[in-house]
Image (cartoon, rainbow, N blue to C red; front, side, top):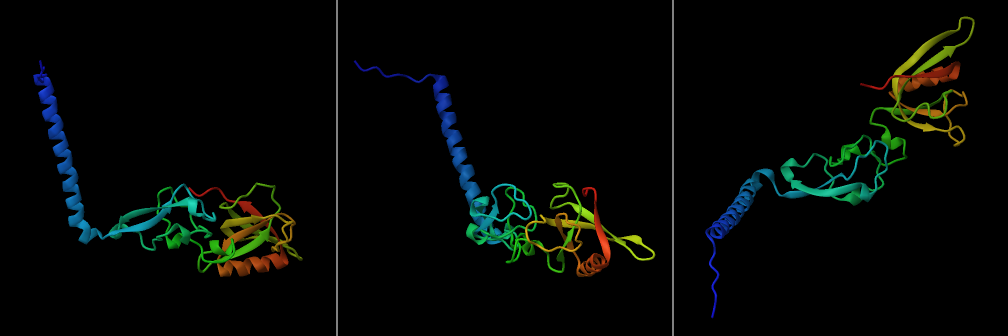
Length: 216
């Protein structure tokens, strides 16, 4: 004897709903694909874009595992996009990059040394020595440079204000810096005119620095 199991009304309703849901999902996906295809002439074909795989900081030398490659429509790709992770390996960042943000050519320093790659066009890196406690200043801080001139009428003058510290060099690393106070060398980002003023002050005055508050 063969027994045939009859579906209950509830089972039939659930089966019908499952079929309808599957059909609706297929229609939505198919419709979305059709809309994307219709927009292709406007948005363009997908292109590879290098993005930060984690938060990246200014001055960091990039490796291939620090970035990822995503595809996005050509119309939405940023100017100066980079298509391959190998193209950024060994390059230095000139600004912070958030996780997932594109790493464009303008975010990368030009070929050169670690400090030179951080200097934007039109500016200069000028090292001065300062009598400050270890770890009192770090890269990214801003300082004022003050010069005290001697002679019959000694006076003190602020040579430049709000100068960004690009790097800090310890006195035993064999580098030269203006000022001669024996402390660490602060590599400052300056204009060519300020560089001349600092060089003059370093030759005829005693140099000191004060630390400015963080930018808000």
